[in-house]
Image 1 (cartoon, one colour):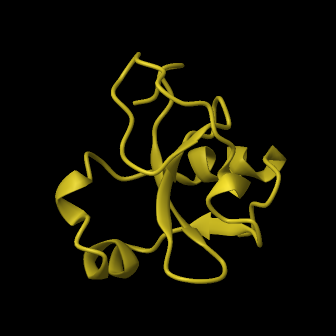
Image 2: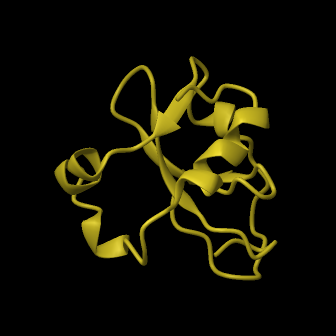
Length: 90
């Protein structure tokens, strides 16, 4: 959960191997999972992925060694909310 109570979802830069976290509700992004209801930084996803980003696949999350951070599965509705955020590609 992010500070605005949205889900922090694993995202992948379109160029390179960068995986980061972003919230479809507030549009913020983090290098590490955010602490619920605590705002340490306010970065946009394009800060981590200037050439665009998309939702990371389970295989990419596993390959990055981040699968222990998964707290639930995102649903299509959450992903579709990224459509309004600069740099998102399906």
